Length: 152
Image (cartoon, rainbow, N blue to C red; front, side, top):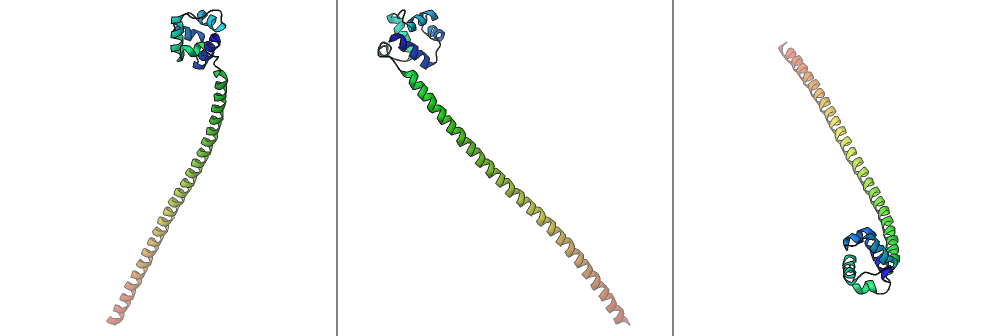
């Protein structure tokens, strides 16, 4: 029980035997012997071990801790959640991309309409100036003719 609990809790914390040994000031071989059941930690080492693994001494000495299966279940659930998030992010990315394209097309159409309006206004302005100049020339000619007839 103790040997299985030490191994299970160490793996749950993500420690190697060497890392755990360094944290409780023993050599790696000592941790290996504890996990294989060849020896047991003394009271002081047992307390340091419980502190490092963040459990009570009672839990270390108690019933076997079956958290490795729970870790596998948690990993599977996290993998499923991760897949769902990836799908959601892809959808969101496509939506934002579509909105961006629509916005860019809208802006482009507005710019083209503004340019077209400016060109048409400019063309009308030039045409109206030309018409005004022709009308003025005709008025001047008519006035000149009238003056010539009046003088005769």
